[in-house]
Amino acid sequence: MNVAITKEHQTPYSLNYRFKKLLNLSGRYLVLILVAFFFLFPIIFMFVNSIKNNETQIIRDMSNIRAFIPYGELGIKNYIDVFKQMPFGRFMFNSVFIVSSTVLGGLLVNSMLAYSLARLRFRGRQLILSLVIALIIIPTESVVIPLLLMVNRIGWLDSYQVQIVPFIADAFSIFLFYQFFIGIPKSLDESARIDGANPFQIYWKIIIPLSKPVFATVAILQYLVRWGDFLWPLMVTRGYEYRPLPVAIQQFFSQDPKVWGDIFAFASMITIPSLIVFLLFQKWFMQSVASSGIKG
Amino acid sequence: MSQNEQDKNPISINEMEKREIRIAWGFAFPAILLLAVFLLIPFIVAFGISFTNQRLITNPNLPTQFIGLRNYIRLINDFDFLQALKNNFYFAVVVVPLQTFFALLLAILVNQKLRFINLFRTIYFSPVVTTMVVVAIIWYFLYNPGEGFINQVLHVISFGKLGPYRWLNDTRLAMPAIIILSIWQGVGFQMIIYLAGLQSIPEELYEASHVDGANLWQQFFYITIPQLRNTTIFVVISTTILAFKLFTQVWVMTRGGPQGATRTAIVYLYEQGFQTLRVGYASTIAVLFFLIVLCVSLIQRVYLKEERAVK
Picture 1 (cartoon, rainbow over the protein chains, first blue to last red):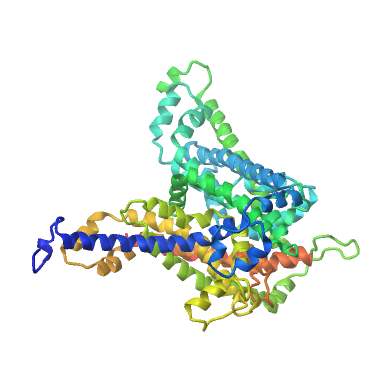
Picture 2: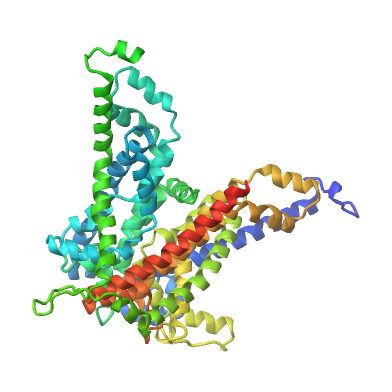
């Protein structure tokens, strides 16, 4: 080995260089893994405690590392308990039905408005575009009170439509669609038009197939917002019939005495499906979130 | 015109244009109708009712009256509301800088070209896809006074000097407790936005500065930070707005307690509109809440415009 290793002498074959590189690399992974543990520990905590059948053990273990170790009497007793006490399947159906209807309806309706604003000519187009952009600022929280009075008057309280219809149209989604659509070359429409295609056909056969990324983005961003929505369903649902998962688990949680094994089983059953959806479409999730930040 | 010649149907251009305008409105109509009925009109109505003493269930003996600015005057003298606003600002002042800083740090961490880096991005993002109600419930258990896991960790790392704390039952610690879990849940989202920002910085900038002899810190402060200016504005503003919307985790964990230490504007709006049924008063809160969000958004627009003007 060289006595004085200067940068120039550090060939990839020198032992010192390789050792330093290994040290550097393992340092990086160590940091990454420690941070990963910080983000995972509450989720692991939930899963592990949900399969511990013995409630006293859960309480006894909660203050130390044993809370993260699946040991003792393990099983699905807590999960069965949840199904015995609550119509869990119903809550799951409600959430899936409400969220998918809102998201799918939104994809159609919002992209249609964006299409007309980006690709068709009519008077008032500019005004509508400015209005839509202005509406992005209005948070749902500031309209829930009049909205509540309104749905109360038309008898929509405790229903599916009250959780779906008001949230189908979304100004930010329209804006995302609009930005994407104006980027598609106009020549495509024109040549299709010369071939005799009408605006419906152009929308279905040219615009939609070319716009898959923006449809995925809007769907994922809306899914994230709607799946976790809490304030509005808390205001408009009463019984079990139309209650979505977040409100259902909150009510289950606020009953005393708290049975933590059951609560964690309930929480796990909400979390597992959304984690699976996320893992399946992980790349799309990341891209959607990234493009939500590219504004202005 | 060639279009006219090719057209087999004997309809004039004028009629075709009219037909196209009808089609355009057909496309636009469903979303416009929904936005008008469920966003624009309720928004205007919110302003309207904020000047009345409307109640959720109207009493025939006490008809709704126009009361002018009385709700507004009452609101700015309402101790509970002022405390709620103060809590919102407290939350925002702590969360916005911390979350932005951590998001950038994490983005740099996962921007390395390493094997399995995608796995780490996925893990750091996973709290974002975990429903907030669930997150709040798990942390409620972690914050358990006395024997809770977080107390135990503090006890061990401080060699028994710290704790045990009563976290959610302590007026001084309840808000910090909610702040920690909110950052834990939300930071992955901004991390991804920063990651996209980092990846859009041209590599040549770093190479050129390297040739000029800049070290890593200089590159960070003179290239990375200025290049991420717009991303940072977006992250800061959207986090600020989210901070003012704070409701779910508070409602699940403390319902605004202890003694109003975690009550926020939206928690108060919910209490007034839904529990005491004073819809008029709740609308006044909604209007003020909207004005705050509007101010924050306008600041963003001004900053972004400045940037464009410079370019």
